[in-house]
Amino acid sequence: MKIVKTIPELQKARKELQGSVGFVPTMGALHHGHVSLIQKSLNENEHTIVSIFVNPTQFLAHEDLSKYPRKPEADIKICELAGIAILFMPDVDTMYCPLEPTLLAPSSKAYILEGFSRPGHFDGVLRVVLKLFNLTKPTRAYFGKKDAQQLYLIQNMVKTLFLDLEIIPCEIIREDDGLALSSRNVYLNHEQRKQALLLSKSLKIATRCVMAGGRDVEPIKAEMLSTLSSLHVEYVEILNRDFDTLSSIEIGNSIILVCAKVGTTRLIDNLWI
Ligand code: PAF
Image (cartoon, rainbow, N blue to C red; front, side, top):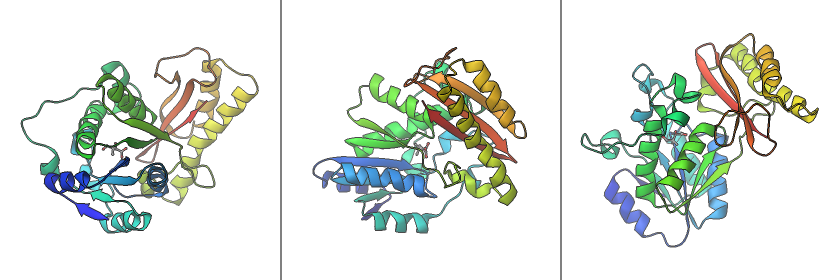
């Protein structure tokens, strides 16, 4: 595995790779969810590139970028053991320059849900992901379904900017008790971790309603909200796969999304039905 930090080093290492390249962009603090993306990329491509970059442009001014979990040594070991070809770990000045055109995510899809409480977040995500795609020139890039809105906006960018790569959506990885893996779970204490299970529980209840033939969105949202009543809920939504509102669930084309705060930790989860 080559660990590269600068653009010329990355470009040189990338040129040496022949055949298909899978790319897994991350912000580090790697957990089993990331490992499942890396594993899928290794299975489906001749080479895999992973990036670790805590991207400042996707954090809002009041969000503490310096508190984002960082575990570079453990991350390097995980990537090495997995058998990837290149690990790209740039610093901020390598990735950004004061004079550069910016990219804006389509506001009707990027300023709702996650983007409503984090306005501008997805502009920063698209900006860095486009740069990373330009640098790594992947055949395929791997993103988790847990960040469903991010995945949608990246797929939309690839399609509308005619980028020549395939986006591979990857399943949400959960603990045995249902908690979706997230780098933010480290912020939860024992009691908060128990409360966090209400997110996946609310999705299970929604599944049960749908399996019992329920299709109307409002009563299902109401059931979910009552399950989540002890938490500070930011949103519960049922949308189609293009993130448009629905009055009635369309099986095979709907996503149920939930976001709630447990203590000060904002958690998200979702279910594709
Ligand atoms: O999902 C993430 O970890 C980040 O948003 C990404 C895609 C690596 C861009 O910084």
